[in-house]
Image (cartoon, rainbow, N blue to C red; front, side, top):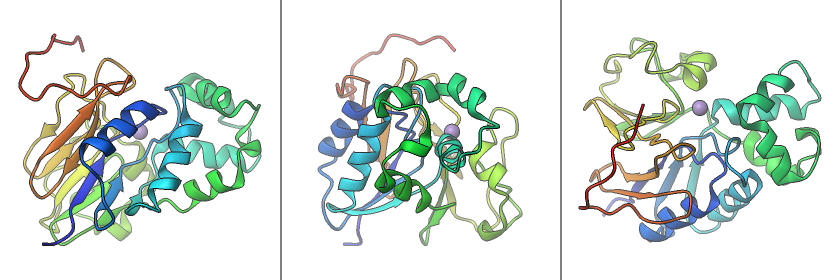
Length: 229
Ligand SMILES: [Mn+2]
């Protein structure tokens, strides 16, 4: 049996949801956990999420990808102030509160190292993984960081990638709470910071595990209240 490849959507500081999906999938040593990034901002416990991600590295193989929010934290950790106000408005205030300090410059070195070591993308024989989007005609190694981390599928929906591999992406929150499945592209950011879920997906079988902010599993079969866009 090849290892399971488990893709994790945008966590955004929701520790209970992260714990719940990792437990539900029974993550084990041979698994590869490809985390699509945006570990921080918006939710109440960015510090806890980064700590969990570091600890998960001791339990299975973790391939963390850098999200645009994680990138903002890294930029601010160097002392640059240009985007500070923007970051605070995009959820950085909650991140500062979780670290109980005034700037990412003061975050623990181990946590900043985790973010520094995040990947631009990850790929296996059949799939590739990016935080936000990609340019269909460009090899993965040549994709601009701005597209990989910032492009919204709502503004520009790429076609199938020229490699023929299936794209697994986060970033563009699916307000239905359901995975967006276009066949050649699947978006598993299912809006944990809003009214949705955190999603973990076994990319080979399509099995998914979802939990809400409190870590309650989504009923696999039950009806669900419709959500507004
Ligand atoms: Mn994002």
